[in-house]
Image 1 (tube, rainbow, N blue to C red):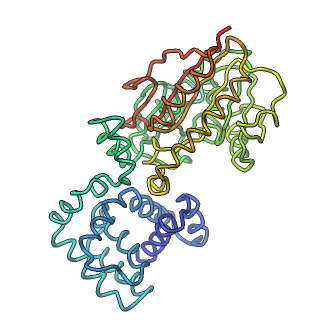
Image 2: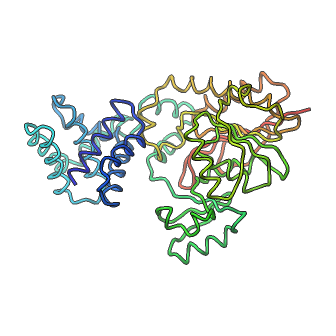
Image 3: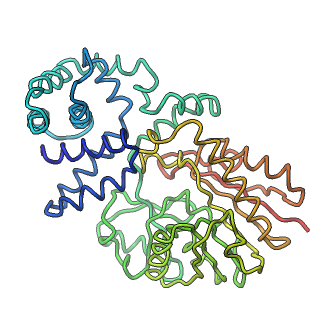
Length: 424
């Protein structure tokens, strides 16, 4: 376990100090540990994700436990990982402490006794320490203070539920390829394989327990994909019909592109500025038996890739803060800065303006983000509508939503949708 603790502490340090993406840092670490068994690899992922998910609380605990800053900062990250295990894992407490001491010894033998004392002090005084850590909002919710302030200002009393939902383990939700199987039929196959699932809106199947994709019947034959239920609303809201020409801007990794193609026989053009991620779109479409024209290009610069033929439907799934999907990407909470939001909003409005000129008369454009910040959502749409009298915002129906805003809960992540009609 101590090797896994140490590797996790190094990943957490890379994210918090160097600003690295968690997935990239984790993948790089796993490549270096090619001999690790699947259970060890899963443990490393859990420790890395979990520590960052509850970093605000864990940092607050260390602020109480440590009487002065550590001279060797590497030990701080070992302690973070160990505290996460003691508070949130089922591992034996004595084993966690012993392995953390071994991890510390590998880095700096002089502080191993201090590590032992700090962790045992936490176990002795857990209730009091947790209460003291929760006195400050960052320690209570495990988000940066500016993030808490933004949500409180926007959502009032609902902000606490949004914050808490972002710290839950995300559900594993499936999208059945309706060209190859009916939802109820596939649900029956899951049941036969001992993988119970419940049907949720729109036509998603939420597994009772997450599993590796190779356990999903027919996954590699294109019967099903993994996609959050909130993301599955995009294809439904876009209202596509056979024969239409459709654009998916900012398409990677291709889940929404594929879903649209599963819903109707359309001429699909998928654009993304990242050629490597565009290859993932191609791989997903090939697995599902679907076809689209894939173009590497910037959605904000259609003059570099557009052929001049208008689209009847456009999905503008624009870059955003990803504040609605932090339970899947907990590093986002600590990598984002308050002023990033204004930058995203400016970029989103620029993309929306450019894509609007590609939309045919009487066509529809669906603006989408995975954000819960109004500056990226309602405010962008309001600014766009004020500048485009030919744009009419259509009403859409979302469960529990507020003007197109899906808030994260036990069924889906946080998303925002606005459907715009180009009037004649």
